[in-house]
Length: 248
Image (cartoon, rainbow, N blue to C red; front, side, top):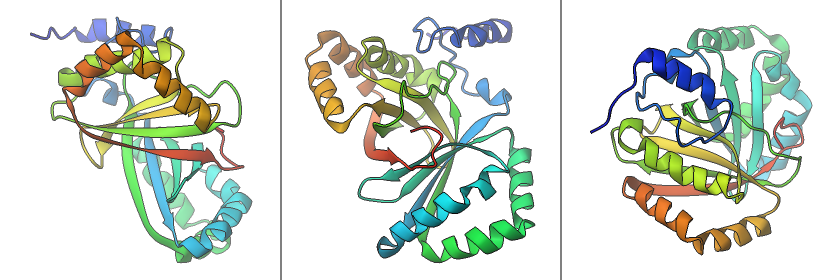
């Protein structure tokens, strides 16, 4: 039986979570709690016509400043085999609306970028997410490397059902030094009951070696098994930072 902490206790716990990322003692099962805070993160995935991918990247590299003048870009990555993924910080839904209203009135944005970029797109996916209470954006220890966006489709019920087990699974990887977590995000609009973990590795080969090592770690295996009980499906994609990406 879960015991839900009071709002006063929750606030204290939330302030403490910034002191130590993935602290197993910090858990807030109330899914709506952190949504009282305005900040959310939007994943935007662009599928470019294959023969125009290089042209799209060159155009974006030249004109991205027109877009970042209006809101904060966290990262922009080329996805191996398919698409481009960007991550944006939003202060509130009202701020998001005002940004798009401003862009619609920005002649440079329209003429120099979006009117050209739209012709190269085949489709686009957007997803609104919140950081889980025990995570925060943490830049990689150095530039370069590769990122992995691991996506987990969990059973319905949210953090109150599987949050503690999932937190423990992530924590065993970060706590053991196997991987660096840039952030852990829970879906709000898009595919519900979905969690994204953005991992950073020095290289794809380092990731392969780490996975082999972790699979032979009895503690990691035991914790992951407990989390897997709540897992419906999972997928991932390897991403490489674009030249203009803040997180590389």
